[in-house]
Image 1: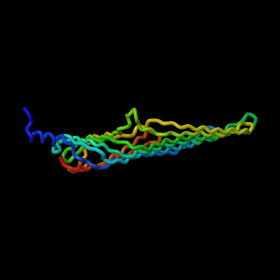
Image 2: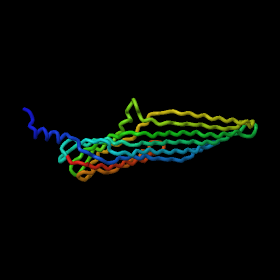
Image 3: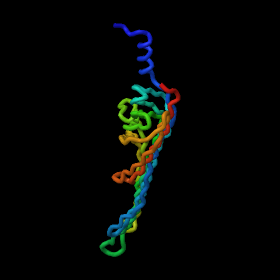
Image 4: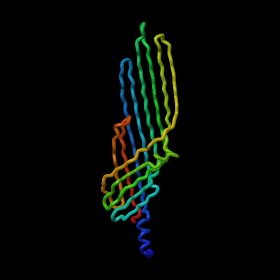
Length: 227
């Protein structure tokens, strides 16, 4: 049997996307300063990291029965920036067989930079008064044709003197590009929400990286039309 006009309209209304607006952001920071001391020398290590994304909803859809349960899917576009800096500065001496000593000074430094427009795919399950299964994944991280890349600049400078006092100086520089996996979020917990507003934040720490990272996600979405 064919659907009546009113039944067909009910299906259209049920499956038509709602309009959502709002913002989503991610900031990841980390720093470390330490000294490694060994016999005859020491190394000062400096690590600094900063990544940030700020975006706004570009497209949205909502499927389901809003009075019961619906799936909201948002495409959030914006600017992603990243800086990863590392510096090791070493000094050392060693005695010579017939008196005097050798000395060495070395600086090894690298800096990775990225700045690109990208998109996050955000989704969550919405029920009256709560939302859950919040996910945000970068749309370009696994894109093999046009992945997010950062530009890496490296430099090694060394200066030393041998037992005869002869000085040796050397400088090496290089540049490279590598894919950069932007951090996403999988937040399954149930959270309270208003009728047409989904807002929240999530903080995590990642001590296994160098430097250890502190990450803050924030979001605020508003349903502009009620299905």
